[in-house]
Length: 282
Image 1 (tube, one colour):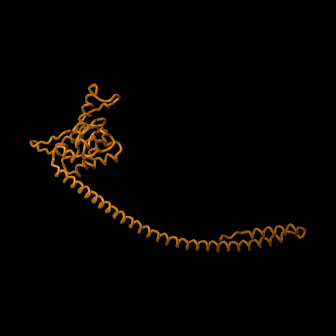
Image 2 (spheres, rainbow, N blue to C red):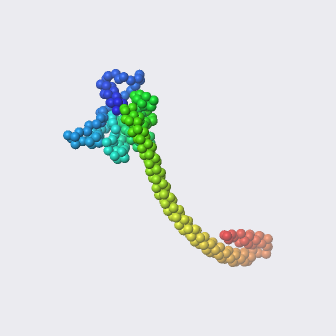
Image 3 (cartoon, one colour):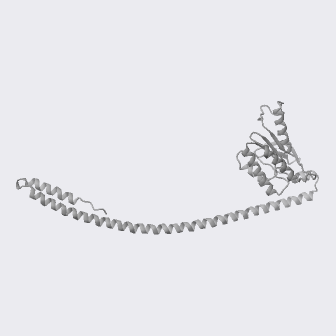
């Protein structure tokens, strides 16, 4: 991984100096405003710098000067300290550089950073190929999939006693099982929280349903009262109209002479029909 970081930085500088780069035909590189790098262990007893402090000092300097269209190369970002805190810090630093508009290449052994890359648009995982048969690196870079560290295989190839490597593999399986159990417990805790939240929502829904039923009953009672009153008012109006109609009919009888008897009767029938057609709402 470190070789890949150095290669990208070197080729970028060669390109910006107008030099040909040893790459496939058609390869292209952008022109960067600045190229920043934190590669290697700059720890110093004299300066009271641990591995982590040395890395952070470099990164802080880059943060102060980095801007859009810069290239940032970071080797083992967040290493040299507690893995959980280092991973969290590394993700936060990556987000900062992304917002700045810088192009980054970052190496890591942290699975948290690999997962972050899988789930974040604009960031791609990659890994350097390792030959499991010969236990040697092939120096081929593959983009799109994160790789494993192969620490046990490399340690064995370098001559670490086999019983130590075997015991380490057993511990690794145990740690992985503990991690699985920890994840299951965390999922159980979250499920319990969701269950409590759902129960609370269900209780609230039941309470609201009871309130709505009560309001519905009150509404229906009120509706019945309004309809009854409207019907009574309509009946009263109808009776009033009939009285007025009979008065009109009586007046019509007095206005028409005997010679217009048919015409008078027709008017009376029309008036009575109109009175009968008065509608009373149900």
